[in-house]
Amino acid sequence: MRQPPAVRLDAAAVNRPLRGRVAIAGAATYGCGEAPGLDDMALLARAAQAAVADAGLTMRDIDGIATCSINASMWAMPVIEHLGLNPTYIDSTQLGGSSFVAHLLPAVRALQAGQCNAVLVCYGSAQRTATFGRRESMAARRFLDPHPFEHPYEPPLPVAAYALAAARHMHEYGTTRAQLAEVAVAARAWAQLNPEAFLREPLTLEQALAARPVASPLTVRDCCLVTDGAGAIVLTRSERARDLPRPPVYVLGSATAVWHRQISCMHQLTRTAAVQSGAQAYAMAGLAPADMDMAQLYDAFTINTLLFLEDLGFCAKGEGGAFVQGGAIAPGGRLAVNTNGGGLSCVHPGMYGIFALVEAVRQLRGEAGERQLARHRTAVVHGNGGTLSSQATAVLGTHDAL
Image (tube, rainbow, N blue to C red; front, top):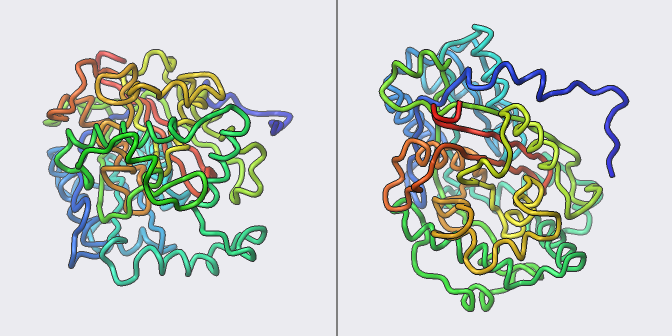
């Protein structure tokens, strides 16, 4: 097990005074699925404008920005230029798909310090319909983001990395392909209730198991979508959010942890840094997994959902497969997981974390339509980046959870 430094700050205790001081005041998505003719920036701009309007604000009110891109290392600068902003707070940290969840705590700190008054967290990608799409981006990243212990062997990353973790989980704990398939089937059941979801046709367990193999033991139904899409949220101090049109969604806890970059350097394939980020986020919030009304988890692959259910404390290590059996995370199950359909059936334009945040906001506001949960006071949102590399956890809640 990875050993902590000899002296470590108690992050949860340090951050506890920030609990509930900042709220999400606006949220929106745009172009989820296919958006031909629009590039990354155009998609981002439309989602950003919609989120700012949802918060009852204008772009003039935005003086903080948090954004990043898979393809552009200086992405924050053209976004600022395009949106006509003059921010006093800028965060362009790129940690993969977890980035937008990871952007929360620094933004909370900046807002509470008075460095800014309204932070826009935004992302857009046209990876499905763009000429320079996912295939080209992945090829370029072999040079821009080399993996010296992996790329020489030319594995089909990232799916090979997640297949490795899935195979190890099956070996260690007896997890079955049918249990992995349960995750995909549950995601599709939620997607059928969501008009924004890209894939809404029924999916049975038998169909998921019989789907085209991609990297053993994973099939195409174990893998996330390749779509276009954009998402954005707006953060303000809580006292201001209460005067804005939408019900505030409070940031109760937030933490980020990274233990490796390459899957070959992961200390233990069945235990992720979500153990650390989750524990710190819960402690900051003063809440536990049992207090969560829903879990919006980064499901790039079906194995992710099992690992994060375990590492975030919803079940013991190795029991994720049994936990999801029998529709337990589908509509009407014991725990609502990825209520929009997740990256497996709703949307996945390269990085999914912002969409998990938006779905949590919609549920907590009671705006999720046919898929709306009866109980919606608290949510845990978890983002994953790289090959199980970066993990970021947020605990969100309504006024009743403060």
